[in-house]
Image 1 (cartoon, rainbow, N blue to C red):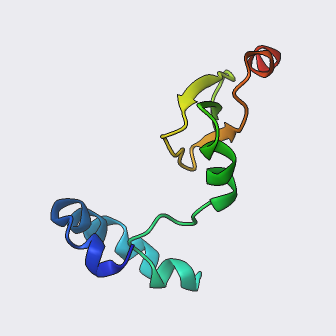
Image 2 (cartoon, rainbow, N blue to C red):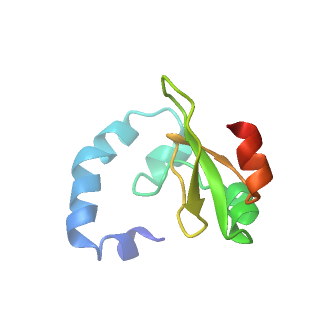
Length: 96
C-alpha cells in the first residue's frame, strides 16, 4: 500500500505515525526507514503456504507452555506467532 493510500485511514495512520515512525526512523535497515507505515517484512512464502488451506496451526513464539491452536486461513499471523502450514488433524495430534 502506498503512503497516500494508508493516510486515508486517518486514525490508524495517525497512531502509526506517532508511535511507529519515530522508532523506524532510528532503525539501520533502509527498508524500515523508507516504508515505516508497513509491516516490517511481508512474508509471501507464508501467505502462499496458508492461502490454499482452510486452516493452519499456530503457537506462541514465547510461552511457558507450548500450546497449538487452529487459525482460519484468512488470518495473517504476526511476529509473535509461529505458523505451521498444515491443516490435517493427524499433524495437530502429533504436535500435542
